[in-house]
Image 1 (cartoon, rainbow, N blue to C red):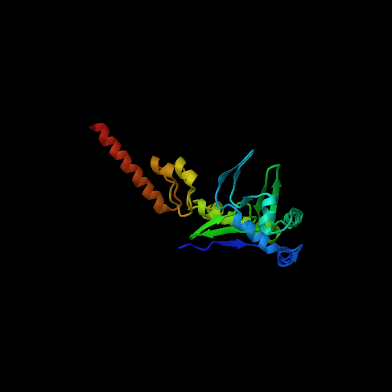
Image 2 (cartoon, rainbow, N blue to C red; image 1 turned 90 degrees about the vertical axis):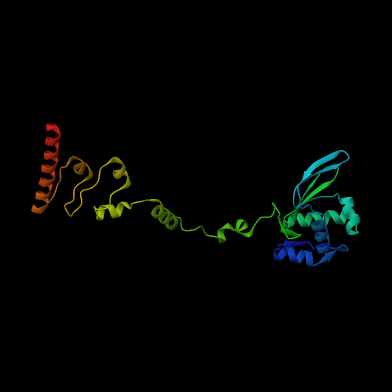
Length: 220
């Protein structure tokens, strides 16, 4: 069973008006649809006597002589229609001495057998009118990112000395806390920096116990 091909056609008001009317006995919409039908949906090599190139998705290689037969009009009419299509940015046309390469700009994608094929030459609206799409709040984004990435908030560290920075933990140094607990360096040496009488007695007891253990080892 043959599946129907769908394509996404994006037109401006001026482009739609041009295609909706006919002149010189040619149906402009029919002419565009024929180009879309002949356009490539895959990247492949194209060869013709004395000419070869690589055709990309969204391109069609066809001469004005062939288009005049396809559209049922003379070459002069084909040339006029193509010139206006180029001016309105429906297509872009590159000509050489052998043929013409037409690139579709108004088709964003094709759907063929359930597969979506994007047109690399289509320019999305957000890129056409960037002024209508204000950038995100960089400050807000950076604030969230900094908050998520950092282990400790420096502002909080200043307000609460109990918070120890990761850098100080690695270096073996910690901040003295308000409640009289000792630093990591002093804890390792058995020396405390307490504030109250009870804390002084505790530190003295710890130091005496360490001295007794040292003397017992020396006696042995």
